[in-house]
Length: 173
Image (cartoon, rainbow, N blue to C red; front, side, top):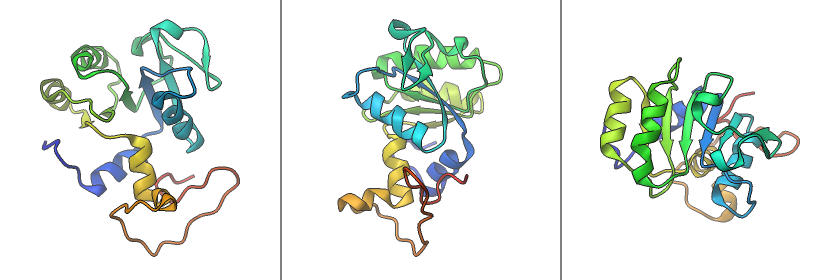
């Protein structure tokens, strides 16, 4: 697959299909991007499992933190990687040992490893690299337009208003 650009339908399909997300490199520090992405995903209704060996056994955003993907007691649909590019092959090795396999490996902004992605895809796992699911969700749902950012997505779809955080249709509840 060409990982230089992604079709909106590919990204939206992933965000609609996954329900459980492991955030590798999750932080308890509320000014770190991994913290507010984890919070955003939880607020959008995903079941999120923080993974951070230095914080294992403690809570991040009210969720138990695990030392490794293998320690998570439930099947994972998506692994969101908040680690540097050289760490990706080892994470893919860990993912490929899981049963069942996750549907998606997603690496955050600036994180890319084409060889590791090819191994994951050969095992039937979808891969997204150098993207943030928080940004992509907000872009496709129209939320990012609240800040005056051109999302590149036009829609006449009326927003579904709910209590708390709003959802514009990427996640159906």
